[in-house]
Length: 258
Image (cartoon, rainbow, N blue to C red; front, side, top):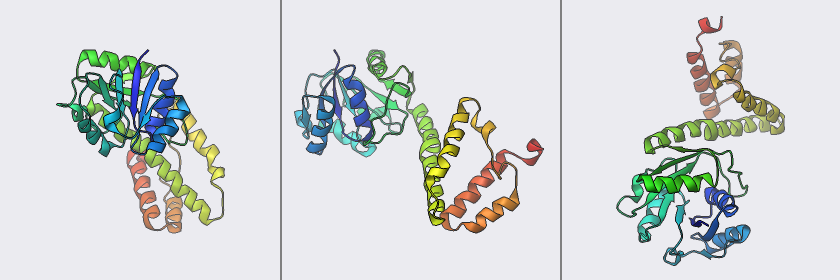
């Protein structure tokens, strides 16, 4: 059975730990905060937790560095190479962080939004993989397939493109919902009212491309409604509404909607 050490106990590490614990041996959890490492280890039945990088289990098959992007390099340089497969889980950081520090290394990035408080099922998550040689890639793909059937080879340039797209589709979309909630709060209305609309919008993506499912006043070039909405907004809400409305109109000239 593959033995894995997970370095990290945050958002990504939590779901990876739960997913891997069902299909391989998670030998150890590391966190800078020992209580966090112990809590995650206990949750998945892992026998070891530590807050000391020098105390990592030395003979695991793979070491997954699932920490914040800024902390990855520090972990890599703090631990000597032991010949195992080392990988990080970042969409925006390059594989070259390992170069000169490890003999076998790679990246396994799950394109998903994670929160420590909610364990995310990984079966349908798309993972994007890269390794420094064919043998390491073969081992990395095998590890990835323990988590999901959707494991795709993607180099650092491709992952950066994917990461930008994921920010638009997830982080920015969530911020739009945050702004919408604030607008409703000002009127004493519940965000719950928007949830059926949000679900329908997302569900349509199973049948239509995003551009095909666009609706609203901007695609109709309904300036009367747009101006009315702008008059109700101020600050960054007004700026964002105006910018996005203009982007929609630019992509959908009136003659194409006649």
